[in-house]
Length: 218
Image (cartoon, rainbow, N blue to C red; front, top):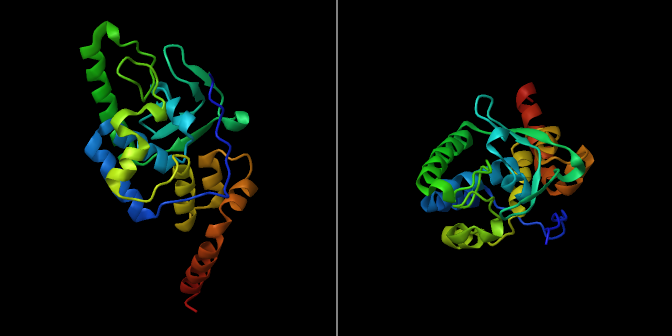
């Protein structure tokens, strides 16, 4: 059965603050490089679950530190089903040097696994893959499952999709231009971004007032 994309709704949106994100990523670090890379990408880019699971190594540009979002994974398995990103449009997302470094380490670890597995590894070039080379599904991430990591990190329970909301909220709260946030998330227009994260607007207004006051030395 092909999984239907998750509809984005904000009525039950929950987000982590910066401290909760740090605690969660520290928990992923204890589990292993694949989990740390996977969830760092999720938090930093706001990519949808299927978009992360659908990433292939050709989509990763280490020189320019970008991820090309070209597809979404609809169904895992020996014959994965792939589709276009939501809204039918791809995008390029710049990642931090730290995230790029994690991906390099993960790729090296994956290469070791391929060598040791031999013919048992059917390389489909997915960035995040099972031990046989098939793409992972987040619901089958073994001991690295989202719920287990939340419990390990002792942070409040949220949905995986709320990592996307957490990314957007933290970016806006840190005065990142809403247009940039829209482009990273892949929203069809900026009004969708502003409406969905309107709860951040008062903070942005206060920051804007303080910045201008400091600039003009009022």
